[in-house]
Image (spheres, rainbow, N blue to C red):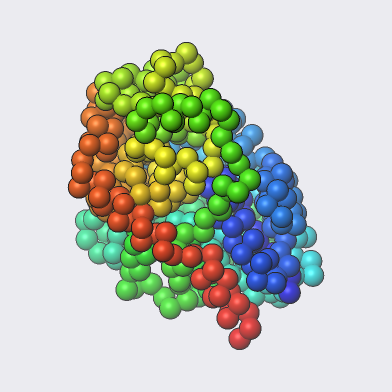
Length: 419
């Protein structure tokens, strides 16, 4: 049976779908993974058949508009609607057309939940069952504020649920014109904002996160399943170079600091702040440069610069991890069983930062606009020396390591398709 998986966005959006695709392929399914064309090597390197979607997300987010979005984030959801439309405009319909082509000869479509309106439209055109997957919760609930909502304080059940509907409306407005143009081209009636919620509430939906981190709210529908994280382990085919091995061996475990592309135009100042904070904290450091969020500069002997490394290999060797709070990076830090310091920039990052704090595995998220070196240094010191925090991080990590989210997701998908 051939299944198409449709995903787009950052590495954090694509990687869980690759992990799921590998699990489904191991279970005997034929998998086609449709993702932006710049992920071809990544997808094919993991043994999956790749169908390119036109549009390089990394290039789009590196544009002036993309950088501005990374820096201003979702503090103003209304502004983000206009910005996201500007970014999506050139590629949205092309991606939808390419995803439709990827479904040829497929028996079902698995779509990233954020693109569920496109996924539903493609499923209708091809007469396919649809399954939605999400790395971050999207369904409204009375239990907590929506991921991406500016106020990540629990102000009561009414506020929480309304914030969920508001964020679905914001996401819907990102690509509403393109969804309905696509539907009109294929003879389908237009969708409205309510359709997004209805699709998520009635379609089988798999949450690729741990119930230890996000306990299942009682007001979510039965069609929603939290499976555990979908990790893509890569220790078997990656090894560190000699200089990294020597750095790790010749001293205390360092603190890993990495923000991907988040620092944007502020990278030089931000890198200087991080180096100053590490010095003040008295901790050794390892800086991940990612897409350029941390600049490569001259550093002292107790700091190591690394472009990238598999998080499943790197994080367990750290004393703590400091990052922007992306869903995938947060998951890897939690699994590693080390404390986490989150400096959120945008979208769902404040949500995950609040989860880290509520779990007791890290200090309060640090506001980027009010960040200075002494404040970051204090958070790093706390993460490295607070015995209760370290014990709790170890407990949460152990609970997550006991889960097998991919296996559970494969079972749920198989049961759905066979019934």
